[in-house]
Image 1 (cartoon, rainbow, N blue to C red):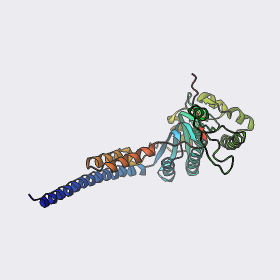
Image 2: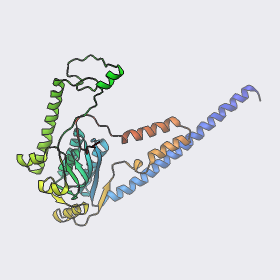
Image 3: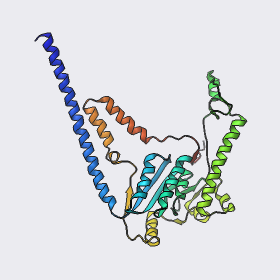
Image 4: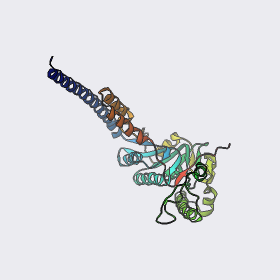
Length: 321
């Protein structure tokens, strides 16, 4: 075989291999799409029947688009005659909690919304619960933590020990303050306290408005403490002790909904529920498209990682050393 024939054969082999890889990837992608369509079709048929929608608000609340879209779907779907919001969250960002609250209030304008505190509805989690017409909690649930928090690390002494000093030029002394690389000045502390104080007032007024508290009742619950479900009844932070069955019974008797089934609305889309994102990445790996597989996995993991930034409405128990 001549050298030119050799290179021709090499090119043919490479072209054949590339076509084979592309074929494998296309077949796998079509299988992914077909499975998603089939699953989505079953979900659509299931969602067409009258039901009580169940939405879970758990973990750190950031007001992410998927959660807001999920709430909107429950509000827009005419077959969903009421919504149970199952909450187990220590809170999250203030703005994210506000976004969830606003989205639930829009739903509550159309149909009954009842919140069930399954474990914790603290801080931003309680903000979400406030959107409901009725709040039910277990006797041992954690409720409250009405307050606002801003935390940041201060590494000035560490940098001093390492002989490192951060330099910068600001347009004004309060720009980018507080800064973990410099001591907090009285001016920056006062500015931050003003923002926290204003946000705290917003939180307290929301509690007062939604729970019908006078100033004295509000003062009893708005010092940042958490309460058990049993304590929360006496303080009127919740309306009843019970669980999801209690909520369903209340909807059936007080809202005349009859014996409608409860349907869980899942936050992820069909592809994620079936693990199809990972399947697509695996297919790309199999076909030899390593970069595409890596990009698919990065995109999937990025959406699962909550980002906490700004003021927090978040509760966690202090750990004593």
